[in-house]
Structures are given as structure tokens and as C-alpha cells.
Image (cartoon, rainbow, N blue to C red; front, side, top):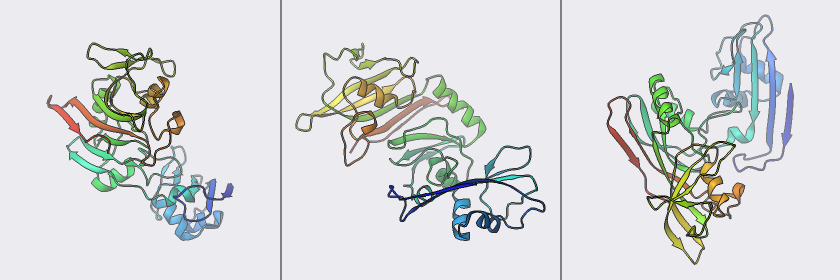
Amino acid sequence: MSSSRAPTDNACSPSGRVRQELAIRVPSPPPARLTNWLAEHTGLSHERIKDALAKGAVWHAPVGRRAERVRRVTRRLASGDVVSLYYDSEVLACKPPSPRLITSEHHYSVWEKPPGLLMEGSRFGDHATVERLVAQLTGRPVWLPHRLDRDAGGLILVAHTRDGAARLSALFRERIISKQYHAEVSGHPAAGIAAARVADTGERVIDSPLDDKPSRTRFHVLTHDAARDASVLRVAIETGRYHQIRRHLAGIGHPILGDPIHGGRPDPRGLRLRATALSFVDPWDGGERRYELAGLD
């Protein structure tokens, strides 16, 4: 068992940060009540243990099986099982913004993810995530066929059946789904940028490898504000590397505003990247599907 306490450095936590990680093997006979047993081992109050359970920070591994989140205080334990707690008061105190439903189909739904909302959880919890919130809002199972950066907002697809997860994941994997974004960058990406060649469509193309893998980003300058020395771009990606748009635009000297990780200057509005359109052929009925949002405010 290990634990640590540190001062808060995150607005999610209203007071001093408390962090504990531990894994305990269930004795014989097993405890009658999970919350009482964890409270005895951690010194945390029953209310904090219940909160950790509800928000996905407690895991149960029955003998010979993989660990899974446990949320119910009445979960039955057996001798030899392992219960793990990953308690972080900052994580558990976060109040996530809610995603907005765009459309709901049998196999999937389309949502607008607000900036600041994670796609999926960690061992420390999952309450502040698309995965958990959509499950709670719809009462349906959730699979995530693709990802959108935490600090970015915009359109996402969520699958609700195993078939939906498989087919939508295949669309992304085989690059036959079109994704469009708007990004606001420093400067004016204009003629003369050697790293962004001009395609037949008039778009500029960045095809420098990322993580030793082929990567391609296309963009078109929509507007330029000379007074602020900033431009709004329409961006499309043909591959899905980690932080691809952010890294590619930073690589040609035009980082996205609000992206200090990749050299962007601070912006009070946060990361200026928004997923504005998704289009694909429905794998069940063959119909064309296109979903759009307005660009950046």
C-alpha cells in the first residue's frame, strides 16, 4: 500500500490534494462490506470511498480474471480476489462539461464534445469522460471508434453495438471517413512554405512523417487577421497520428493558438482547434452521411 499527499495545482480540486494507490488481496473470510473494508485500509471516509466507487476509481480482479471497475458498494468479494484503489482527489473533484447529442442511430450516435472533456478514463476514474457520460445519458453500451484531443472540441462518433464498433473502427482504420477541422494559427501560411506543397485542389499539403509513419494533413487558409497576426484554416487529415494537426502546423512554423505544448502562443479561449465535419458512407444502408458544426467562434 502506498499513499501520497500534495498541494493542489488544479482548479478541479477545491482543497489540498489527496492521492492514494493500493492493491489489497481479499482475506478469508471476505469482508461483508467493501466500503468499510477500504475505509479501514486507507483512512479515507466512507463518503470518499463511495465517491471513488461511483466515479470509477476502484477495481476488482476476481481470482484468475482481469480487473474491472466496480461501482456498487454491494459487490461480492471472494477470498484471494484483489481490490485496487486509485484515489486522486483532483481527478474525482472534476466537474466535466456535458457533450451535446447531434443524432442517434441504432448502431451509433454523433455528439459535440466540448473542449476539456476526455474521451476515456484512466485507472483513477472515468466520470469526466465521453465514454462514461454518453453511457449515462443514453443508457446504452459505449465503444469509441476514434479519439479527439481533450482540449479540442467538435464532432465525434460513438458506437453502441459491437457491430457498430467494428464497422466504424474499420472506416477510420481504412481512411474512408472524411474528417474536417478548423484551426486558428499564428501567422499567415501563404506561398513560399517549402514544407506545405500545393495540391491540385489548391490546398496545401503537409506530408512529413510523424513517429516514423507516413502522415498527411491538408489545409486551406480561410481568413487572415493582420492585426493579430493569426489565420483560420480549414484542415483535413488523411492519417490519424498523435496530435497530427498540431504537430504538422507547428512544424511549418504556424502553431495553433492556445497550444503551448507545440509552441502556440497562449489564448484565453483555449486550444483553437475544432472538429467541424464528419462524412462517410453508412456501412449498414449505404447512404451518405455528413454531420457539420459551425467553425471557431
